[in-house]
Length: 508
Image (cartoon, rainbow, N blue to C red; front, side, top):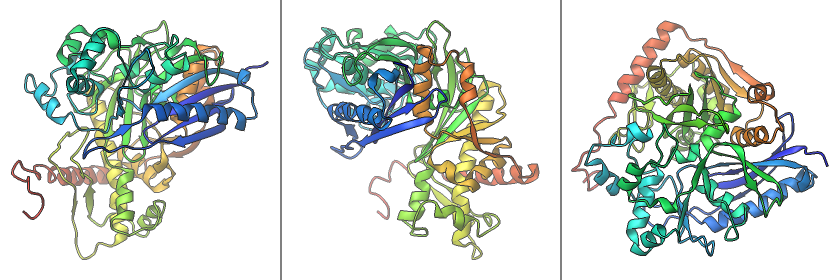
């Protein structure tokens, strides 16, 4: 029977989906199922890994059935996943020892402070490319092992396995307790703080610093290779790719050359720039990470800038201020005025992320006069996403020595044409949105198809990338410089708002 499709599992933060793609890279079918968000305490965020695995067992056959295909028509399976989320389980029984702790969880804040007391937040950056922060896997794993001495003893004896979500899924797909493969890929491993970014291997000094026994760690593999064969869900089908979700989007956007970048706009935004075969250490507040690696080849590295608040700022306008009834209305409201009227909004609701990393900053609206209408506020909100993107791009250009020549975009906010035009204006480069918006799943599919010859070579994948929309810069250089200066002055006024003596809360 002819192999006609590639299946991609996208195990995300709120749901798990399976999408089938054909030879032209077109979406054929999709099945999706949400999972619970578990909040045991303030700042704690967990998922049930068994629930997620059960959802995989449901959505994959459903996607195949929707395509009216037989499992034998699937050429390979690729996986993309929420990054940094940690699972521990017993290999003998296959039972997790507790819920997965997600990348959003902040319970390790005091532990991170302890680790940073000797050498600062950049203590390990030169080796692993990352600053000490709560959402990387290493601090979470250290916290878990410290909570129960029995877990540490099990880990040292090889009776406890660690993995991020792709590791957990691959282990279950390939047999679980009956010979399941325990492996991870270089992109997910690069988010643990335990892997040397240059050697792509677990680092003994980092393992020692975090108190992690090597016996519990998965084998690190490339992103594009056949790992093994599924024994369940899609029995007999090759599992041929795994990537962290943002790297999968980079791959799905075919950003294969140094200087090519993508930004995914959702609740927040993730900006990734291909920096080529050598890791670039950031001195401008960005993260150094692995972009992707094809089996037998050198890795491609990336710089990453994360923006905490983009789509959630629109939700705030809708849900908290009640100025719009639905998110798409913001574009209509913003078009009722010609500009922001001198008003700027900096959405530092929980501090500022890249490139500032100012946890004490808080949001502001500045430049208010009696002239300002809700239309000006709507435009200022869209501009806030654009200027935050500009800050990330400027940092990437400075770190990499590369000048961005264009930006590929994806995510829900890209349906806002005014926002996309504004981003093109402030970056002074073309902004392009692809025809297939599911770039995370498409990236996992591309990688898996490449591994099994479904698609013959990497650069040929560019032929499957089709542009749905393009925005060209229209803003004058003078206005761009003036507005950016105003934005930066507004950002500076958000600093140092939360003080150590502000423990009693507002109005105390």
